[in-house]
Image: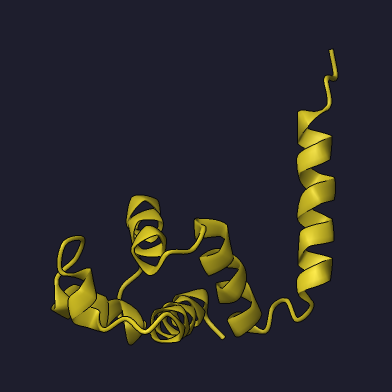
Length: 96
């Protein structure tokens, strides 16, 4: 599944799971724009993803992790987090 469509599915799933309507996002986005995101017609900016996650009441990485799970590119959340932890640890090591 294309990531844009996986994000659409994840956004809709997270919004509905938290009992929110598209109208609940009126302060951060128009209903029309949110609808185009949820149909996979547009890709949001990083700033917009952050604001959408805040509005839903979840961490932006939760929304992105759900996106990758919906994309079927990743199927095991524990493996995703293990990989991220290893990569971040490697990036944070002082190499100099």
